[in-house]
Length: 516
Image 1 (cartoon, rainbow, N blue to C red):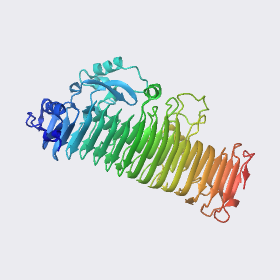
Image 2: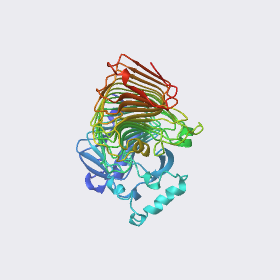
Image 3: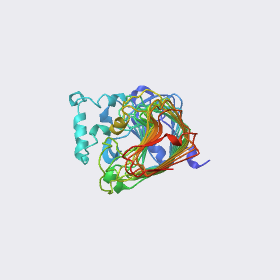
Image 4: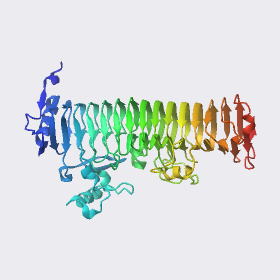
């Protein structure tokens, strides 16, 4: 046993009442400060501890017994101003409820609860200024004066996260429940070697910006055996926004997510849209996503810059998800825009792999849209089952998706370098099941299509090479593959169902296509 293991700091002995009425900030922070001097454990026995924001220092274990709740004050004036990162920008805002800052060797453990009482903050989110509590408008004006003006970030997105780990190393969170965050629930930023294991993250679905866990410009992060019910993105990976994010240049990298359960929220695992400092080397496995708007979502836009690369998503089950796979280079912008010159603000997505995924009761089979000036590349699927028969619902989807999914359950791909599908089954009630536009190379190997598909199963428009091998499709009088566009060059078919090769059609625009 190390010397630090012998030091225990009971918040009751420091005067904490734990009755849910008295403000216990001084007692709890006193125990935390003394613990940071020697190392050891701050013990929080059963009870409800009403408190202002707290800060955890070096060599400290904050242990909450089962039945212990830290309940943060419903008073914005109790939250000091601090510098941190909000939605990709380095800015000032409200102090996080529980803050690990510039610390090493920290643990938050036990079966207790950390409650941000976010409803106090949510009611002001869309409220007119006259309904703010006295002094809040002036506080937000102070933030605006101190921060460089951000056209896409309002001061009231600077609500405090429930739990933020910033500029810290060797942090472990296990056992606890984190609920009702004013802003993001758990935010890991500019940190290394962080583990979240067996944690419950709970935000109601109407929590504005109520993300579950945000990994932001941090390395060596592990999330495992965790339950997340989020009001926004469930697990989100970020690395800063636009020119500032590129200048900071701290990627989110070496991240694993395994054995996690996600219920509700805007996405199961989401990357971006703040990804300007790069996101790479991410592995997600053995997870379930239920009732989320998207399953796996990568979102970016011109101006972000940065590279998202080398991502693996394996052994995932999704159910009642609006769209299981989204890679969108047009986040809240127009997909039909013309190419623009490539510069430092041009983002890139490459080497994204999906395997052993089942998606049931979904509406849209998939949506992948790179940029015409920089195609996204290296997208692959293997051993994937998609049942896209759920009624269409355009709720909370981007303009790019709404435009292309107005009346289709299609798996849609545009402006990609190469995309491949091996041993993939897609069931859709409409045609086409898959549509490709402005893609350099498409490979369909061992696909099985189910559903009516009265018109065509696959459409390709301005696709350089399409290779179709070992595929099956429902019997139909319609085309299996319909080709168009002057950039469509080669369609190669082999080893498919009998008669499938005869069901290839080209229109008058496909002037240089060769079918073999």
